[in-house]
Length: 204
Image (cartoon, rainbow, N blue to C red; front, side):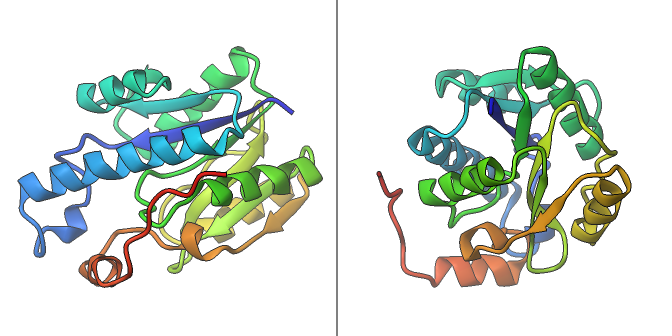
């Protein structure tokens, strides 16, 4: 199965707005860039994807993608689901049979997490695999291409994705893994991450 990884990225200076009370704009910009860098390093180490695509309006994010041997895709609009749909269409037109849609704000992410997700899909080809976040959002979504349903990233999106995928006739698997469930959104998340033991990216 030709599985691609798609990572949507807000302009670094616009990202992590819920951390405004805890971090300055400069700090949030730096944090967002470091999170994308981490995601790309982990993806490269996982060696589980035919290609990695970064879709963004931010020239800095697209440049980082190119330096990391990922495909930079300039976002046409300013909305997450539209950007991901654009990237899925691009991937499908380029030969991808499936895609993992993954945010770049998973600071605990390790190569084994991505290998595990890729394996879940290979065990259940043509299915949809959803990893919920702790607050009911979607922190990872594996889907066949072309997209069989309309994406619904946002609040409580894991349930919305499940409903839409089932309505489209897809078999759906809801899976959980600690590192994939932890995203960096709130000051509480930031505090939890900063006080956790630091962890290097683990090679195979």
